[in-house]
Image (cartoon, rainbow, N blue to C red; front, side, top):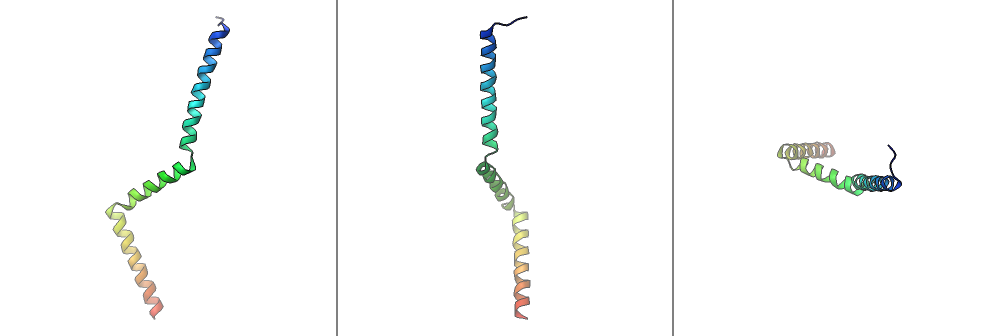
Length: 73
């Protein structure tokens, strides 16, 4: 079935608009600043968990103590 040129042009314009919207969403998701902010908030949320926070604190204190002990010997 043959379609008239106006219908084809409308379909093409709709496809262009959909493609432009898709590209806009992709560019927003691939923005380096957006990715860095997302990674920062994910890490911050993990570090706010008591199990992680206190484990890192204990490890840091142990490392500091061992370094201090080695320097004073």
